[in-house]
Length: 231
Image 1 (cartoon, one colour):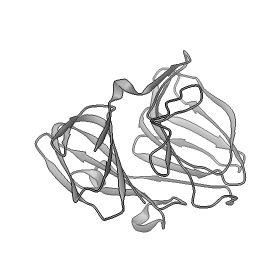
Image 2 (cartoon, rainbow, N blue to C red):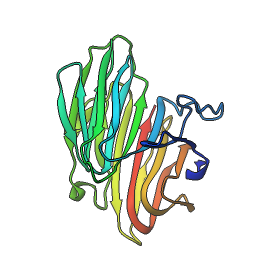
Image 3 (cartoon, rainbow, N blue to C red):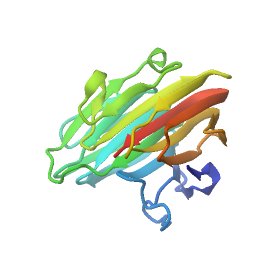
Image 4 (cartoon, rainbow, N blue to C red):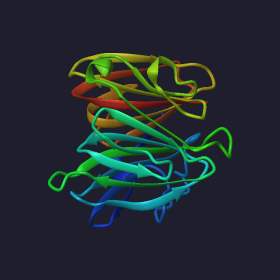
């Protein structure tokens, strides 16, 4: 297991946007953290009230947005117009090309969200959009599948051999994730404190795991974890 402490992530402060980068992104470059398997980008963003991104174009990337606090307004060149609230996950397939913009819908409260970019299993896909909500009850004390390569169990479909899970745990609760040979895992702490394989992880910490027989999670302070299960 290799730790990625929160304070060691790349930092970017544009005034209206504060970001922490687990992997190299834009002006932040770290040759030791270019990606982990197909997980190319993992950014934690905070956008000030009434601010946001203008029109941005992407190609050949699966982009997942998971809102933690606040409300994010989204529009794209496919004609999709929506808002993303806490508990909702959005996935766009940039494919042959997609332009989109995102704004903090509130003029009083910041929006806090996580964004992951996953390299797809093929180039030139038709651009697409999907968004689904997962209740706190569906995550409490268990692994909730939010994204998968085949869209099973009501998850959003990701064009890559990746499963994305979330869990909410209370203090002193424990949970095991059964692993498989040849799979690789990235854990990201959204909130709370945990022991993962007996190693402490705090808010914003990440961990890369390979060749583990199982992943043992013990909650020290109530919070949420994301887990990427990858080829």
